[in-house]
Image 1: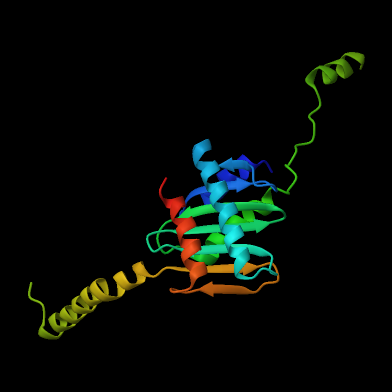
Image 2 (image 1 turned 180 degrees about the vertical axis):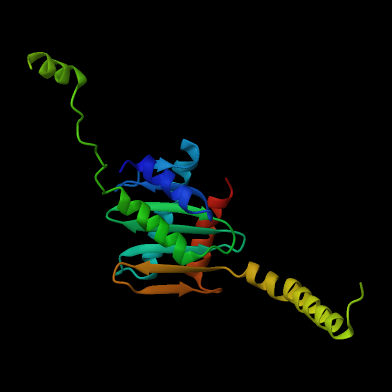
Length: 131
Length: 67
């Protein structure tokens, strides 16, 4: 699935997420809900949060960060080398937000559903003409 | 339409409870700041008020809300 499609699906699904950006393996923005500047800001914040969280337990591989700021929350979720960073409303259902972000990241690996090619009308006409 | 005495008492009690929650519990909940870090091995750490790592994370995260 394309990052923009996964993002649209995520925003449709979750009413608690306010701003979100989906980042590639090296931290570049694949898709975001805000302006390019806002997405870059979220990408920078996600990188700084992961670095700061890594200092808490240097041997651990950080996969999720939830920060409750009181008036809102910030989530960073990593899955399959990609990262989603989101801000939410006050007192969100943390488990649900993490699940939704993780699902969006997993959807990126899914192949787009392709319809089987339709037989061209012209070919059918040719077959009819031969008969 | 008149409300019976027991109903009036019950209503007053419920109203008092709601007001108490609004003034005492809600502000405390809103002011609570914490961070949870989850690791790939399934373990997690919750940082509570007073830890230096939490202050650093809160400082970075606060930038996300000042768009």
